[in-house]
Length: 156
Ligand SMILES: N[C@@H](CCC(=O)N[C@@H](CS)C(=O)NCC(=O)O)C(=O)O
Image (cartoon, rainbow, N blue to C red; front, top):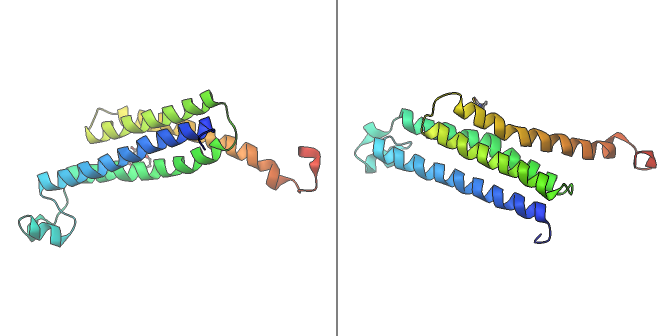
């Protein structure tokens, strides 16, 4: 693995994004405590009473940011890993990973700080571009193997 520059780069940016997701989870917990809005009765009872087992708009915003991360970062972990196996140019691969990483960080900041629209949507769309590119390249690389019979060497 240490000799595969592309995979190292993918691992680096993926880990940054996983840490970012942990940060959103920690922030969600802090907002719950600050706004006294708990998801479970046992947590509410420990923090003032059952009336604090309730929803809060700020907590819900954190949860939406986290859910959107799961909708996008989890597929990236698959696409990026497979794409790394296709032996792409290290520079081009790094640009893919960097754009996704920056896009997702800006998406989270825009979501949590309620930045003016369309900041969040632009960040989301920017991060989607390398994912579509990687998905397309994976399809192009794998299609010959299931479109043609193994004994037919003409496509090689
Ligand atoms: N599940 C998403 C699909 C589309 C999406 O991810 N949109 C981006 C850019 S507008 C977003 O930040 N959606 C807000 C969200 O998922 O909470 C949704 O319901 O909006």
